[in-house]
Length: 193
Image 1 (tube, rainbow, N blue to C red):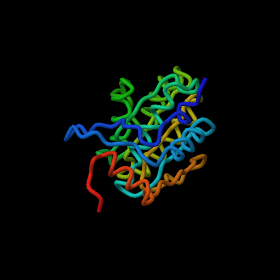
Image 2 (image 1 turned 180 degrees about the vertical axis):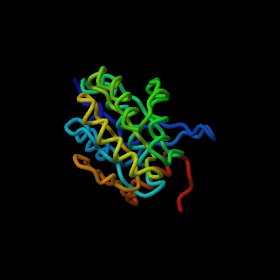
Image 3 (image 1 turned 90 degrees about the vertical axis):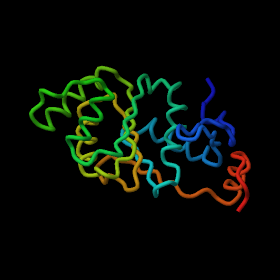
Image 4 (image 1 turned 30 degrees about the horizontal axis):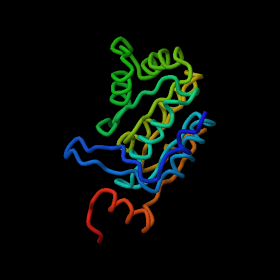
C-alpha cells in the first residue's frame, strides 16, 4: 500500500475553521508530517514542540490523518488539555475521551491504571494529548505511567516545551519559510505582505 504521507500534496486543503468557516490550506510541512509519522511508528512517546501559533496542532491533525490507515494505529483518540492544570484535570479529560469511569479511584495512580486498562485492551492505540503546556509536569508523570502500563499505546503530544521524560522523542517545528508562507497566503486567498 502507498504511504499516505508520501501521496500528500503540498497544498492540500484539509482544515475548516469552526469559528469562521474559512478553509485553511496545509502547505510546506509534508516533510515534517512524514518525520513525525516515522517517529510515531517507531517510538512510544513523541512530542511535537514549538512556540504558540506555529502549527503544532495542524501538523498533529495531518499525522492523525495519515495514521488512520496504518496497522499500528487501530484506535485513535484525541484529548485537548488546554484547560487542564493539575493531574486530576488531566486524568479527568483523558477519562472523558476514553469513556472511562475513574470516579471511584482514590488516587491519581489508581486513575492512571484505570485509564491504562482500556488502552491496553485495544492494542495499537494512538492517544494524542494536545496543548499540554498548562500541565507539563502532571502530563509527563501520567504519560510515563500510561506508556508503562499499556504496551500497545503510543502517545503523540503537542507542546511548547518538551516533557523531559525518559523515552520521549521531541520533534521541533519552526516557522514556514518565505516560499511556503507565500504559497499558503495564495492558497488561502490572503493578500501578500
